[in-house]
Amino acid sequence: MLQQQLYETVRKFFRAHCASSCSVCVAVSGGGDSVALLRLLHDLRENLGITKLAVAHVNHRIRGAASDKDAEFVRRLAKETASPFHLLDIDGKHVPKAGVEEWARNRRYAFFAEVRRTYKYTYVATAHTQNDQAETVLLRILRGTGMRGLCGIAPVRNDGVIRPLLDAGRDALHGWLSERNQGFCEDSTNDDTSYARNWVRHRVIPLLARRDMAVVRHLAEVATSAQNAAEILAPIINKWIDDNVVISGPCLFPIKKAGLEDGPVAAEAVVRLLAERGVGVDRKHVEEIFENAERTSGVFLLPGGWKYECARNSVEFSPGGRVRAAGNFRCTIARGKEVFCASANRVLGARIVALKRGEKPSFDDPFTAYVDAARCGGRLVFRNVRKGDRFWPFGGKGYTDCVDFLAKQGRIASERKNSGVVVNGRGDVVWVVGLRTGHPFRVTPETRRALQISCRPRA
Figure 1 (spheres, rainbow, N blue to C red):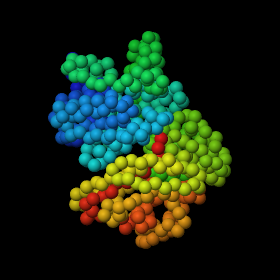
Figure 2: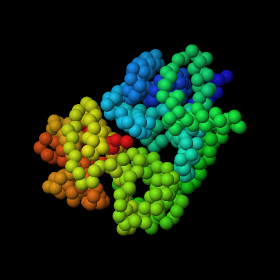
Figure 3: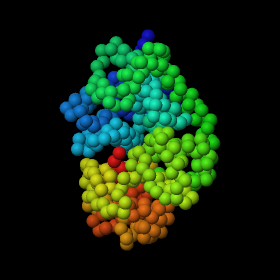
Figure 4: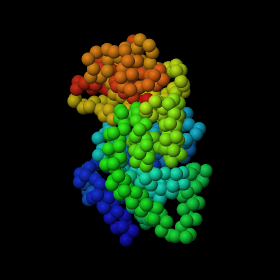
């Protein structure tokens, strides 16, 4: 009976949200929820039209040998289900002392996006459950949230991430695994109530459940109602963005101050604009943005390494909030591993990507660039832009002054001084980070080996 209920939950999700024929990479941590998701999709793959099923796992190395044990468990599980296995091993030296949860989440999703692009999977499936949805809604209520926050976890994201188990309870999934004698890994950090989510999971929700056993379902229904309302409001918010966002780029978007007078609509629009760029803000941040907008100067920090700067008629949002003002930074990029440039608060990496004839890599991620490996040379350096740097923007007619190029892209003076560029051994600008690659180093239909360069703010 339990198995049929879970099967129908997954079938219903795929009928509503997925293509009739698709390939799916399952994000598997080794915990019960993700193991159940993999087993369910494996059982139903023909019925769901899944042409290829794969597994992705991230070993954060936060728990030492236990993390390695989880990775090996997931590797075996992938082999048992005849699924290709994609693993990201993170050097423990790069784990930050603060903000570990957000850092780990960002690294996971960046890896999942890379795997999806590289291997052309239709979707990446994560094992978020009805319990996760309830916890998310309650956490956002506790810290102060608007309509977007109440929407909770989206069933489907624009980047191809799907959540087939949002209508399934954790107890049902673990009970089904027990019936099948399928083991899974227990993460000791899930019991640590110093983490906000664990505190809500183990203390708050059980307390609420004493008054109403259906509290998890009710909180999840709040998310569904908010999602429906958000769909109705979307055209209004879209029009506000069209009218008030001067430049809508991945790394910079100035907003007209006059538009902020629209109150609730403006607030929801600002939250959406930031969320689309991976910046999570709460009600406190939004209130501060509106208060500070009355200023004509000043730089203010946001989560995720972003900031906003108040000008006379606009508020300008951009990444790089922790870069030292007008300071110099320089870091050699190592191929095949990540390096941290402390003075710029950036994690950098580079790796070779093989391309088929005519294949074009995705340029959707502003923190990732692709260039022809043979053309850019061997040694690459990340540094701040300098006076006299010359740059030929991809698709442009020829060389221009790099600072002038930044100005034309809408970068304000203080931002231009701290903009990062990647240069080769000859000093040629290969990439103006977050904006454009150099035309001489572009990927062409003849390119067989591309160099993928990443430059991300460290959370």
